[in-house]
Amino acid sequence: MTALAEFVPLTLCVLTVSDTRTPADDSSGDFLVESLEQAGHHLHERRIVVDDRYLLRAQVSAWIADARVHGILVTGGTGFTGRDSTPEAIEPLLDKHMPGFGELFRSLSFADIGTSTLQSRAFAGLANQTFVFCLPGSTSACRSAWEQIIVAQLDARTRPCNLAGLRGRLGER
Image (cartoon, rainbow, N blue to C red; front, side, top):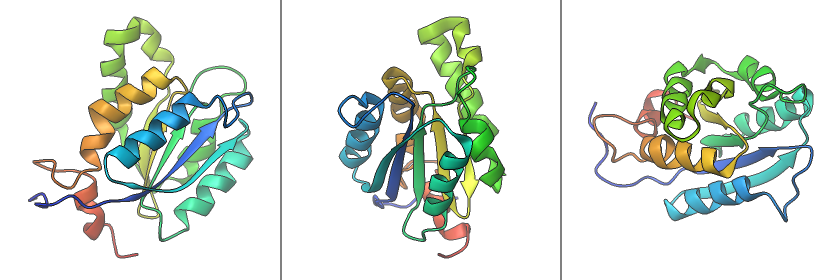
C-alpha cells in the first residue's frame, strides 16, 4: 500500500473515564487534545464520563454513529480495580479488534514501569469505520501511546502503511 504524500487531518474525540477528574484537573485529556491539535487533527468533542460501562458505551456509540468522527481516544478505566470497566464497555462495540496495539503498548511501557505493564488492559479497534484507542488514565501512558504509536498511525504519510491511509478502504462514510 502506498502512503499518501500529504497530511490528511482527521476529526477525533477525546473521552476521559474517571470518577474523580474534572475539566480543571484532567491532565491526560488535556495532553491528548493538545497533541492531536498540534499534529494537525481536529477535535470534534471532549467529554469526561464516570466509570460506568453503560454510560461509556452510550457516549462512544454516539460518536461512532457520527459520520464526522474518524477516531476516538479514550483515557482511563483500563486497569484492574472494581470500577475499571472501559474494556467491558467498549470491546463489544468493536467490529474489528487490533490486538497488536495493546501488545505494542505494553511492550513499550515495560521500559517505563516494568512488569506493572501487565495490569494495563489498553486496546484498540475499529467500530463503524471509526478508530477507537483505549489508553490508561495516566498522562505518561497517554504520552507513550500517542508519541510512540498513535500519532504515526493517524498520519497518512507514515510508510509503509498507516491507519489514516486505510480510511478509503474501510467503506465510505
